[in-house]
Amino acid sequence: MFTKSQVLETIDMVEKEHFDIRTVTLGLSLLSCVRATAEETARAVYDRVTHAAARLVPTAEGLSRRYGIPIVNRRVSVTPVSLITAAFPEKSGLVADALDRAARELGIDFLGGYSALVHKGTADYEEKFLRTIPEALARTERLCASVNVGSTRSGINIDAVRLMGELIKETAERTAAQSGIGCCKLVAFCNAVEDNPFMAGAFHGVGEADTVVNVGVSGPGVVLHALKGAPEANLTQAAEIIKRTAFKITRAGQLVAKEAAEILGARFGIVDLSLAPTPARGDSVAHILEELGLESVGGHGTTAALAMLNDAVKKGGVMASSHVGGLSGAFIPVSEDIGMIEAAERGKIGIDKLEAMTCVCSVGLDMIAIPGDTPASTVSAMIADEAAIGMINGKTTAVRVIPVPGKGVGDSVEFGGLLGRAPILPVHEGDAGKFISRGGLIPAPIHSFKN
Image 1 (cartoon, rainbow, N blue to C red):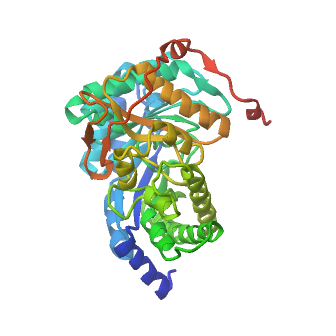
Image 2 (image 1 turned 90 degrees about the horizontal axis):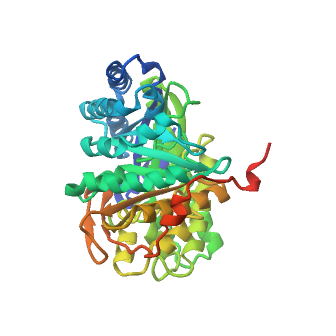
């Protein structure tokens, strides 16, 4: 239970420091929904989601009122759909429609799991499924897709990486009227985790319980406020401040997660304590790094400051809960972080520095707008680079880029809401097509052999 002082402290974090529970995500297994035909499977999927998640939105709203903590998103993640539609992959779009309709009717903000795990190879049914992604994302509103193309144990599936570049380009073109917004709902992973509550990468792992509640907390503003109160602190002291702040944030997230799981009759999974920024001023990871002493995020020292921030967040979180999981660290999505947006507009940060930063933070090249005429092979090469960082370092990395149709360097794009806005960043002009077209599998690193 919270003490009176803790309650007052939490209220202060909410009112003055942009603290919120970013998402309560209900993970659902769809394995029991497989039927003889695509039509029957789609109906079973719809029934499963509408029944199991019927109380998700009211539960989140009730907990938000009870504790005075905003719960921004109510989400569902499901078993990777490629597994559910393996017998009829060309008709996977029927399941996509069923999932989107269920999400819309229940008031669920996003539903993740239109996904495939092809890190070691791509079966025929999986390739057919992957080719349905652009159309599925173009004709749905709340559905999110992810593809795991590599892992530390298996290496990188370059054939899947090549295809992902093509699919991202096609998705952008199919949603050109909305500035390629379909790509905001599509992510390529290396070392994807099964308990991630954040979109677009959430899916329900096969090894999980039937229904699981995972919660993602968010507190860049809380961390920023704490650091502003100690402007003369050295970096050791700053790390301690961040760690104590992450402890408080995680504790509040665990309270909400456990109660939500109990009400919904689900297992409590994890609290993901990732610092997830928004376009709102005062809620920026970039501004935390600048508060530590950088003139601008993107300059020399940025990677070191981010490494310290990420580590301190994790240390504080694991002291507050035995169920910390997901991605847990600091996100650096360009369009969703006002500090990143402004640094990119000033020319202070580009894709190369963002790639370097992903070596030490959660995930990777995230919500980056690039020229609409960027070749598919260049997008694939960006995915390959990020996957290599994840594979070698044993961490999750990802790419969520938007080749904005009709836009070039010097333009900007507005997605709205939590997706924010982004200047179009330049990509390298060198052609990677020959490298990507070689295909095959980049072998796993030697340190992957640990049995």
